[in-house]
Image 1: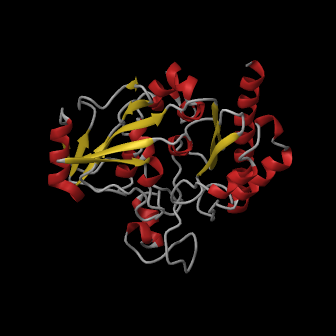
Image 2 (image 1 turned 30 degrees about the vertical axis):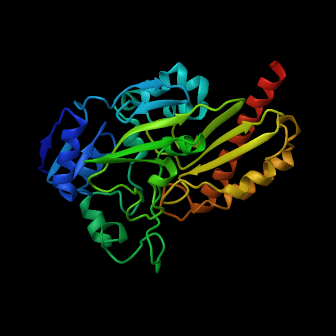
Image 3 (image 1 turned 180 degrees about the horizontal axis):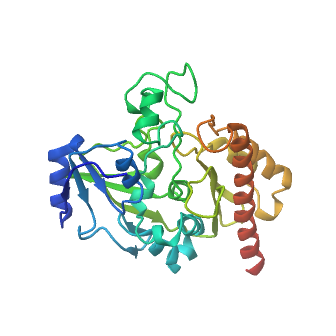
Length: 338
């Protein structure tokens, strides 16, 4: 499939980039690594007048440690993150999520911003024009129907990014800029939970940095995902977990995040209740199962991906259990060593 015709823009500064985005807005789409948008262009899911490449823009790459945080530039590749000893030592879930995306050739060009801000997906939507037009327009392309859930009044497309659950779990923040101003928000606030428009950025806003807080004391994180094949595919179920201990050895913070669970990653806060306030070594199998059961209830699954929704719900519970057990095991091992 050929790409549609567009004008290619290649600015070299953030200021120039923001001016172009402010001027063209809906007529423009941003290209970071290009691994996600290229398929959307070929399928005519987007037909912009302008494509703006971030490849030559200075100041958007690199991993830097500051006093209380690690800063990742928006166009830092997933391979750079996966190979970073700093990320691996402080944020296991982020390192693992980066390492599990697709294949090495894709990770070498895919960026953290591109993976984070990718569109939601659906079998009825992510097709070429001919079969898509044969079905008729769905909510995601301006229609008034959902082919996955007949009679639904909203879109049930699924966000399948790997990095978002891991970043949300560790409490990462995002820096978003536009001409004349910027804002810093939790990564979870980048998402609208609306399938028709899952990313809550205006067309004149650019994600420039991700900030990961360095916690004091002992913490652990983990990421698990399921795909039908070992590479290339998007996760059909995924889970990230973060655990933080207080000085007395009790778990004072639990963050469980589900991926491929709806139009946005899910952060079921009530799932923490079974784990909070306990020492890692005192958490029982029944506590883990209770947390998993509460987390899995947040899973929003319909039959619009490669596996039946009922099976994906069970997979979500399994991925959550594995991630939670891995994080607990890490804390227990650290505690035993100390």
